[in-house]
Image 1 (tube, rainbow, N blue to C red):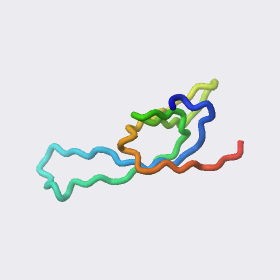
Image 2 (cartoon, rainbow, N blue to C red):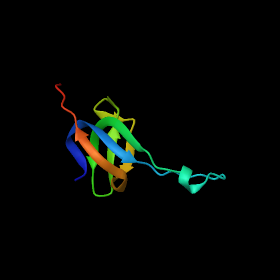
Image 3 (cartoon, rainbow, N blue to C red):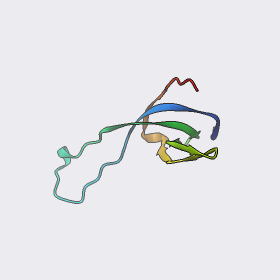
Image 4 (tube, rainbow, N blue to C red):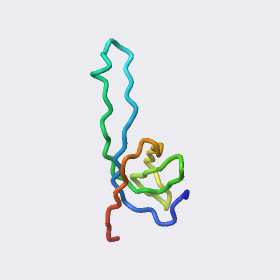
Length: 80
């Protein structure tokens, strides 16, 4: 799959990388799930792309998330 013909609104739960460059001990460094809302416009085996704005039939405000970081994609219903 790639550019979606019919993009749709989603809530994506994903986990980001956490790194430190100080004296923080390992037990204090943890990953936290991120919940991001957006319009799913692209999907392939490596990544998904969410957009938050459209102007002139083009998507903007893009977040690309590696599929390995994605825990869940929940499709939202919308009437429009």
